[in-house]
Length: 275
Image (spheres, rainbow, N blue to C red):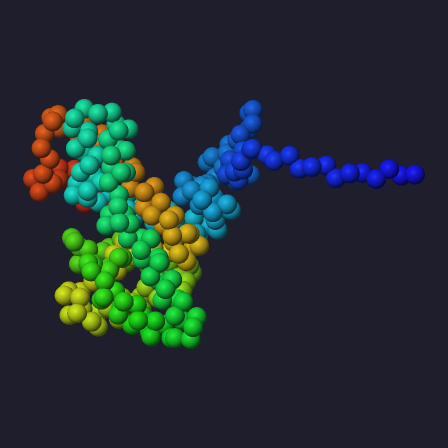
């Protein structure tokens, strides 16, 4: 007689799971790829995409994401995050503390517009899936933006009347054949807003946050990862400002961004052949 086997009770596991990085003696796997094989073969932007999205990007996506990271690497001394980093640095605090203060200065109105813009672009796309044309969806989105206080996320800029970073990113999305439904709707909304500029009080062209939002959404990034891309991009700028404050300026000074003068390199061009 064959003795019936009783089902073994499942022992609940107290171990949690991660799919990012596997560490073993003499081996480091990033999403399954040995990190030493990635080194020198992937750009930093491509490695970021791999870590966040789980798969290797195509060459076009890698180049697009690299441009996104470069686009927001720094924006002078006036952003709140930069001032926060410099104000902590002037106390003599360590570099890491100064940079951390800059990171903590990101909020809904500084670095948060990317997520907000991604969300309202998706709301417009939902209208299109319900049967509206792109133009009708764009007009509906503009109507909703007019009912909200403040500047629409992803449009207008306190300094630029035409953000050169946004224009370049959208141009690259077209050239690399990565222009998807989010970028196309963004262009439609910009056109609809231009026709109603008087209602907004001024012209509000797409800014770099809006371009990053549309591009990242077309690349498949989740909302919060859009903001994370901005954080990754701006971190070197915060480090540079905190380091400069610690090495060039007197300690414990009162920092007024309106008092500064630029004394760096004059405008120059990349060498021929540099892509």
